[in-house]
Structures are given as C-alpha cells and as structure tokens.
Image 1 (cartoon, chains in turn orange, green):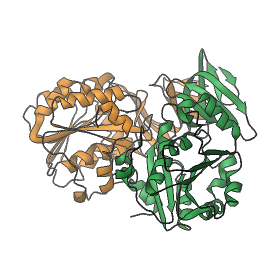
Image 2 (cartoon, rainbow over the protein chains, first blue to last red):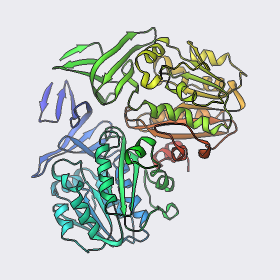
Image 3 (cartoon, rainbow over the protein chains, first blue to last red):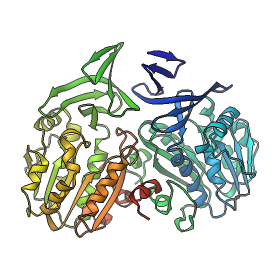
Image 4 (cartoon, chains in turn green, purple):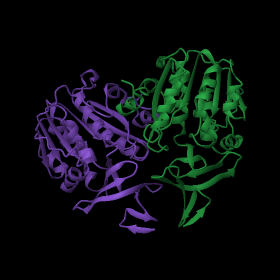
Length: 287
Length: 287
C-alpha cells in the first residue's frame, strides 16, 4: 500500500480515494484516474475519475458532486425555490463552484441575472474544464461570476432586492463556516426583496441533525415561512440530505407550472420532497 | 493491521468492519464489539456493535439492518402493503429473519395470523437475543415461525388465500437467489387471495437498477397493478432503496386510516414514497 497525499492510496494496481471526515465511517471509492489535483488558497481541489460515479469534485477529503448523480443535489437546491417564487428574475447563488446550480437556474428564461459568488475561483475553473457533466461548461451570459467571500459580499448588498438567494455551501468547516451563522442569514434576509425567499443545503438529518436543527431555528427567527425538504444523495454519507427554505411571502410549490428538463425533479417530487419521516419531524419539533 | 476472519480487521486499537460486496466501493464501519459471530448452514452471521449505527446484523459481508435505522426498511416493507389492503388478516412473511417486519405487522390488531418463513433459524435466534432494538424479542402469539426454504414453502401453499405476502429477502445471491425468479413470484401469486397483494424489497435503483427493472417486469406479467416505491436507507450503498407492490385488486394507500406508532412512516410518507424521480421512471419506462 502506497500513500499518495492525504486522501489517495494505491493498493496493488488499484487507486482508492477515502472520505475520512467521519471518525467511525470511511467510504472508499476505486479511482481510474486523477484528472486534476491542486491546492488553492482555500483548500485542496481534486477531480477524480471514479468507477462507480464517474468524475467527482473533491474538496479536501469530501466529495462535493459527481458526474453520475450530482444532478440530484443541484436540481433540488434550485428548482424547489424557483418553483415556489412565481416570477424570479434576480438570483444570487452563494458557493456552488461546480456551476451545477447556476446551470439549473439558467433553464429559466424569465431569470434576468444570476450572480454567483464563489470564494475559490480554482473550483470553478476546474469544474468548467474537467467536470462538464455537472458544470455544462457554463457560459450563459446572464451568469455573473464574482470570486469573493459570500458572507462579505451579501453584507454589502443590503436592499439589493434579490428574488431568490441559493446558499450552495460546502460543509460547515473551513471557508464555509460563516455561511451557517445567524449574522449571515440576517444579511441574506436584507438582500432579499420583500417577497423574496432563500434556500440552503442544511446537512444530513442522520449524521448532522444538530446543524439541521440550528439552521431551522435561525431561519425561523427571521422568516415567517420556513420549510425543510429532503432528497437522497448517493454520495453523501447516510443517503438523506436536507434543504431549508426561508421565505418572506410565498409558501407552496406550484407543480403544474413546472416544465423543465431534469433527471430527478418533476411535478411529483416538487410536492413529495416536503413529506418528512417522523424522526425528522421530531428533531424539528413539527407535528 | 490484523485480519480477523474475512470481514473484520484491527487497525491500531480500532476494530473495523468492511462491506466488500461491491468492487468499486467499500464502506468501513468502526466497531465497538463483536456481540455474536457464528457460521450457520447457510451463511456467516454476525451481530456487531458499531459506533455510528449501534448493533448491526451482518450476513456474510453485507449489513442487513441496524439498531439505529433498521426501522426505516422494516416499516416501509410492511405498512405500505398493509395500508393498501383494507382488511388484511392472514399475512405471510418470507425471509425477515431479523423479526423487524413481523414486529411491524403485529401492530395491526385485525391481523389474525403471521406466518414467517425464514430459511436460517440462527438469524432469528441471534436477532431475538442480541438485536432487540429491531426484533423487539418478538413473541406475539399470532406469529408462526417456520424454518424452511421460502420458495418451497410457498409452492405448497397454492390457494392458501393469504391477504398480504411480504418478501423480505436479502440480496439476490446465495440462499435468496430463488426469491427473485418468475417461478417463485408465480407461486406467491397463487398463494394470495383473489384480492391479495404482495410487497418485496426490489434492490437499489442506483447500483442494482437492472434487478429492480427485472422484478418490475416479472410482476407486471402476473399482476394488473404493479407499483414501485422508495425510501432512503442510510446503511445501504447509494442511499436509495426500492420496494415493489404486486396487487390483484387494491391500488392506493389510504393515509387517513393510518394510526400506527412509527419512526419513519406517516400519512405523508404513505403517499410521497410513490413519487419517483425521473431517472427511476426512465428505468421503469413509466411516464
């Protein structure tokens, strides 16, 4: 066995990547090829070609998205809020360096402007060059790439009047930590129009339910309408993933209006994703 | 590193169990203790106490159920068919050695008889003794334990007139292989009353979608009503798990009638579990 950096090892002829972020659970993926591997000012970035999930974007030791199933996460974090808002025109995406969320937003012809604020330009460049199954080599003219800290950016955008803000952050460690704090959520609230809404990834109800509950209660302190929804993401440990909506006015999805070409989301999913198992309701103290 | 049998290894002071059934994905669970480890005439059986999921039943190298989240699978394979049938009285469970499915069925006071046919008595004994979080040390007098091959048993039960048959098999390798074949499904059909229905676990839509599709088409050749539903099972690779209903008469769940105490299933889940993502519909060739 040969160690190759912190995250890859060679066993016989085989190359393996191991997710090591949890103490008691390790997931090993057999890898065909290291497509890209560089350290940015913020994190180590790899694009790995895996046997089971095709190309994968890996930040430090955590898989962010894959060619085979990245669409699940990216469709869920975008189409749910964009379907709840009846006429979203100005969209802000915070994070989302793989470009998959912006690519989904660009499917809405009435959207006029997509500001995408990603702290790490190298993630965008690597995803555009080497992970086109997710990024689509995004080049829609409505997308405005801003390489900046999402928390600082949104603080300056008080009264900018975004219709929808999508918080597509990595886990609450390192550069993304601020994106889970009340101060940041308050700044997002202030950057939204008076009928605006936000959606964020809110972690695993199995492994990080304390963070999911914290996000929920922070958003409840700001918004009259807070709703959690779920999807299954095969490459996130525990399978379940949660997302949370904070909305100033609009409450429900409108499945009949949905007409996008997608691989996961459809009219049924736009409703069923809000059906929560009892163990999730109990954590959120919902009847 | 010390190898301990085929499935366990010691790394420093830590004991790890590795699921090795997939060539390109290995999942390692840190283990506190080996509670039970014996080889039966059919397979190697372990009860392991894990850090993340509590006690786990492991057959050969595959986790079957865990103390922490085994209720998801067991509730989904039972309450969906029992809620579709308006008055289920005679129930047959094939497999289900962890006793979790029978325990859920026993929550229905109108059920008169629960025949549970499990090929491997040692799985039942180990689960009753060492995995009470799942088995509940099942001792309901309506449960009839039959230690026999499920396929042979059901062949003799032509015209027995079961209301619901639940096929709670392990994966289609080794002793469970026959439980995925048309001959067996035909025998199940013949053992059902004229308004009876069956439910089976139908594998992962991510990793074993070919088997999921085969089960679907075999059941379509027998039943007028065939419906697939999904749950997220954290300890099954890929997160998603599918179940399939074959029904002679009854089609829909009746959420308003559901009054059981459960940790996953509720009125909302009884409907939302049938909402299929586009990639699953495409595999099944459903609009």
